[in-house]
Every structure is written in C-alpha cells, then in structure tokens.
Image (cartoon, rainbow, N blue to C red; front, side):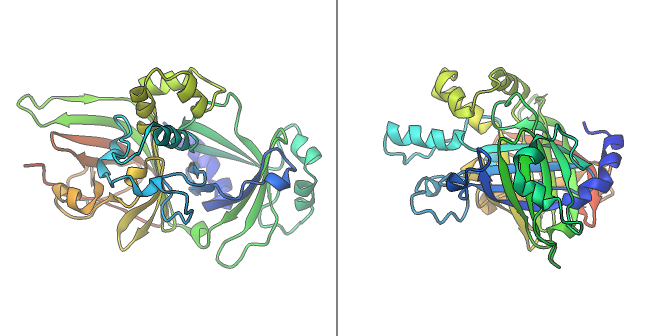
Length: 389
C-alpha cells in the first residue's frame, strides 16, 4: 500500500505533470528519427496528489484499440463484448471465428506485444541521474535553456508496482523538459530521455486534463462469494489501481500472486519471448494474457465507457453502472457497480473503502478499494444493491 507520507511528499511536484498524456513519438535508439514509432497508442494517466499513474501501450493493429482506423486490424471486430472479463481471473477468451492456427498465433503475438504498467511516480526537480541523458541528447539540452519553460528540467521515476510484461530488470527513469509553451487549455509538449540515453519520447498533454478533477484508488482485497448452500468464499491477493484525470479514467489490475510470481521469474524477457519459450500450453498463455487488465476510457453522461483495453472483450463496455440492479449489467454490458463500506453514505471520501461488485451466474466477485486521492470530484456509490435471483 502507498503510505500517506509518500503521498504528501509527492503532492507539490506531481501537479506539474498531472493529467492525461498521449505519446506522439518514440526514438529507440535515441536519434533514430527515420524509424520513430508514431503508430503505437500510448496513454499515461497521472494523478495530482497521490502520484499514482497508469500507462497503457497498444501497438498498431492491437485488437484492444477502440475506434482503430487501421484497415488491417480485422481481429478487433471478432471479439464479443464481455463485461465479465473485468474479473481477470481466468484465461483470455479467443474469438470463435478465428480461421486457422496461423491466425491464432498472429493474434496471440499481437496480444503479447501490448504493454501496460502502473504504480507511483516519483518526481524530482532537475537532473538527479548520472547526467548521461543531457550529455548524449542535444535536443533535451536545448530544451533546458528556456527559463520560462512550463516544465523545467526534471527527473521522473515511474515505480512499476504491476506490469503486463515481465520485469525489465532496470528502473524506469526519464529526464524530462517541455519543448513548447503551455496553452490556455493546459496542453503542452515534453521530451523524455532515458537516464542512459537509450531512447527519447515526445509527449503531449490532452487539453483540460491538467485541472482535474482527479481521484486515485488502490486495490485492498479481492473476494469471490459463491451463491451456494454453504455461501462459501475465498480471497486472492493481487495489486491494482484506478485513477481519473478530467473526464478520462484508467484502471489496471495486476495478475494474481501465483501467476505474477511465475511471470516475474523471467526478468529480461518480453512477453512474446515468454509465450514462445516458457509457456507450456495454450491454456497457460491465455491465463497469463487474461489475468491482467489495463484499460482507458472516458466518462460521458455518467457512463464510464471503456475505449481501449489489454483485453479486447472489454472495449465498448461500461466499467461502472449507476442503476439499482446489478443483474441489469448483462444487458447493458456494464462491468460493475460501486458501494461504500458505510451504509448511510452514497459518496466515498479519502480513506474510505469502496466495494466494486461484479456479479456472475453463480457468484459475486468483490474488489475492495481504498480511496487515496479525491480532488474536485466525488465517487458515486449505491447505498442499496440487489443480489442475483
């Protein structure tokens, strides 16, 4: 769990980079402008006070990219909407309409090429690294010469508490500075160069997301309550984060401890390499892919619409519903509903626990979240919630 002390220390600095950032380009290696990646959809959603962030990266033709205009991305239309996929408790379900084994292998590779991670940002003024980024990147050095830059030279350390990919084995540290003025709507461009000068990225902050509202929640527990004569239940341990910036939100659930430990044993490998070399069966591959969920969406007319996701079956679903009956979620493609731990309140506050209730045919799946940041908005919850008949 994130401590209140660390949140307080982060508060004054993370405000400078709060909002939703869209990556414009990436040079890897640094200076290779000819092969810049300008097609991967990358969205970094950053809160203002807690430091909690979620990062989602979907390469071109990834099936979880909503509204993808790529004519070659035929697999995106094969997935049925499945709000139950938000559980991330079992194997990812492949479309039934896949033509052959070649199509299946290509789809698995696309899914394994996705990146998503989440945790807490540590922000520092100036360059606190070895200085290699400024030494090797003349463009970044030039950015630092602007005394009126909206984002002066700084160092960002993204602590990855959960990760779709196996651990890289190194820290995620970037030296950053703005290379444009900040517009009245809060949008601006920044350059990030890796501390070892191995890469550079260009980021653009989306309009008005800098001013919030913001919230951040951290997953506390997860429980499956079975609707049987014994009313049995069991818990599983994993980490997760849920953030909002402006009208945008992001949500990330790490793999259950046993699966996560298995993936972490293969530090330095990509998930594609893991799938090809380490997974012993297709079932194991699909479990690794399906037991992590990362998504990004927009709040419109009180609906939390999922636009992009590591699991394509969630695109087009609604993350949170506002109706009084959970069982209506099946027809509305609604993943869940919220309720506070206090029966006399319909709005959560910082420090409160919030239950995210996900119903199935035979059980009720409950994630309990702790509210760690609430800045300019509320978290609407149901005071009464019907159970399944």
